[in-house]
Image 1 (cartoon, one colour):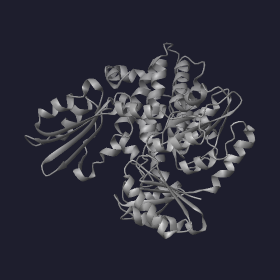
Image 2 (cartoon, one colour):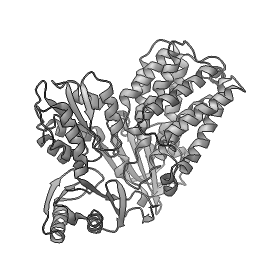
Image 3 (cartoon, one colour):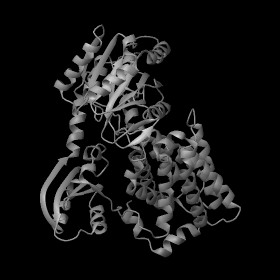
Image 4 (cartoon, helix red, strand yellow):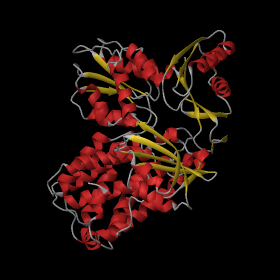
Length: 560
């Protein structure tokens, strides 16, 4: 289904949908409306990032998780609401990406558990479903943190229970649920100080609000997929980030520079573009506009034709995103991975760059899953990496804090013996790999790998995506920032300064080895110059340099 499908319902049919118990088809319609509204506001959710680092992908992860849920539900022909909810939960689980996506999948799992064996859903059953969603989501997180998506689903469930004492109309109940979610999201900074410091609300909670708000907007006949007209200065258009995540139907990236013949009607322009593609951005400078959009293959020339009706085109840039993805897959396929025999231990490593993947392969990894900042793999993708390996002993190295939950879910849905080592970066992953003994005792190897995580400090150098003050450190958008073991510790003008402050903060003089992994946005010569500077500053240290190939982060440093 699509938003076009839901829009053909008349206003009477929309209201009737919640005036009587909802069956499986009605649930599909509501969930698709929620997905459409979430997708419309995806970039708003992505922007709700605490740290000014390029990993604002909560909106994208939730969209892809919901899309997988609806794709699975679309195969369900039984109008039974319980059967549909089970399909939604299964699709969400297998398609879950990132921590937000995994928790969202647990919300739908609880929702489905409450609806099991029911043909339709009325108001009391919706309240029960939200209560079960709350309980299941909390149980799925080892150390729940208040002020995030868990708090929002809890507040929604609690308010729904109170509202049920006053009305049993589904429409009114949904209105109250959305209002409760709005209040809960607004309060998240009061529960989590880091949100208040960054001046944002919780991204996952906001995404959950948008899903239920989309259901309500659909029933109230309000638009769901009309893009919000926002024009940025050309200098603020970040097209590198815009093309990092390629969703279904985003085959080509098109960028057009043009001068309008008359005053540009932005609302109409955005509305027209939203019929063609997604990830729409428009920038303006000196009378010229720049438009960015992702489109399916069959629509790749439509933005050009449409924009030509409004003005004169100066320049067109078009990139095949699918080809880039296929090249990445070919690189991964060309890796010389370890051949594992039955009974041996297979390691699955998640890697954000081809150079890092080669290192994991050289250390004995049996499978590599491409993923990292802004490209979190799904539970299904992680599961597929080891399901066909000829051994039942598997260790997963997620190598990113936002992939740990998805790895754990993949481990929970297989009959194989799978353990997740909670590595949050590549250096920790390499440290763990050095403890691998292919034919060793499984439990002893897992224990040894876990112990290795404390043996390396990790530094990361990247560019600030926005201006913010965190823990007294003032960061300006575009500055070079340094993180030590995930903590923001420096904001400077140059990579050289960032490295210097990072190593000082890490007390590198107390260590023996410093390894640099340089990313795709820094050349070999510059990386070698940085390594030489570090050798001069730490003449007694072993300093190594490797091509990492990771996106976004100019450097990843392992300090051992």
